[in-house]
Length: 427
Ligand SMILES: O=C(O)C1=C[C@@H](OP(=O)(O)O)[C@@H](O)[C@H](O)C1
Ligand SMILES: C=C(OP(=O)(O)O)C(=O)O
Image 1 (tube, helix red, strand yellow):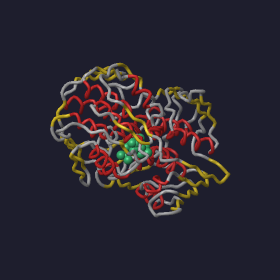
Image 2 (image 1 turned 180 degrees about the vertical axis):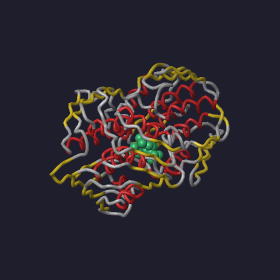
Image 3 (image 1 turned 60 degrees about the vertical axis):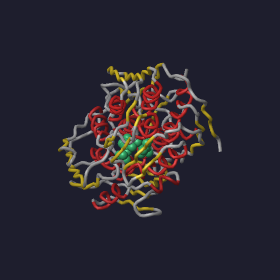
Image 4 (image 1 turned 120 degrees about the vertical axis):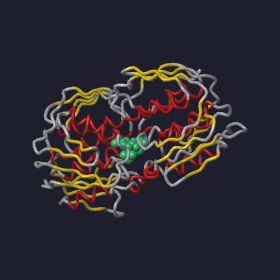
């Protein structure tokens, strides 16, 4: 297997313009496809997850023009539901932001499709989305395990007026229903069962829908109402913000090493909840400066934190490796759903942190990390086909022992050029 050894880095400094947000790229592509009018998306992310969405849209007959560097895409909106006579099989890799939203949108469309993915996708739950759709008349079948992809969808117009969705495992199920709701011709009430996780991603969904002309009544994240006359209208142009989760690695590097790093493309005007990662660094002792379109961090001695990080599930992983450079025991709590993402992230993180000498407690929904007293050890880190494992553990190069990352190309899911970009802030 390919591996990459990072020698110890003496200092970090510089400026990084992060690539476009995965969450916004895939939401905006889907909404542009079902809008009336033509949309030009700029600063689109070029990565595996986005490629899967683009391939799916293309197979469904959506016309778009992608620039040679794949960061600008002009989409001809279809003005409503998908319609395709051919039977299709759409391979969506391990992209949750393609699988879940396409599942709901296609269930309401005139299509006959199978949605498939990588082996890990077949272990990532989707029953909390599919079951309420089936209960309201959609024709969806599980092709292997009940509750998991692959799926067969025989889409059709349904006249559901109320859907109940469990919010305790993934916010992407609610996101999928919200984005698909305007494809129905009636009023829809979506009611959340249990405590909704990853709430800021719902804000991304609602704000993106708003940009495409649809307002949703949000009753304190407990229920949502979409009116029968809601219809997507192209905004003409849509600028994808830089990815706030991708920004976390560069900001953490500055916090750990003591230099100053400025990340541009995302800032205090961002609609992504993961910008709150910078607040965690500040709480740990780093100095943070904000602009509308940038975040700048200057390092200082770091102290451990004990925090509920349910609101920033992706960037919270970066705190787990940053904790190796902080004084005391860091506790990241209320992150049960790390277990159902690209890998079981609680277990993977605990296993690999132990390899560098940390003391780790892996709980059902939390992790505690205490740095070793005798210095970090060099280790060969397994990444479990999880882009964030590779990116988080690159921060170990800021210690005295360096680090070896196995399968570094797994960052292609959201950040194919990660290691090149990381080297630009290394001094
Ligand atoms: O809606 C989104 O764009 C996402 C929601 C989050 O998932 P969960 O809601 O499953 O926590 C996040 O982890 C994922 O990377 C992207
Ligand atoms: C959980 C993630 O991805 P997905 O969109 O596939 O859920 C992630 O990018 O960390």
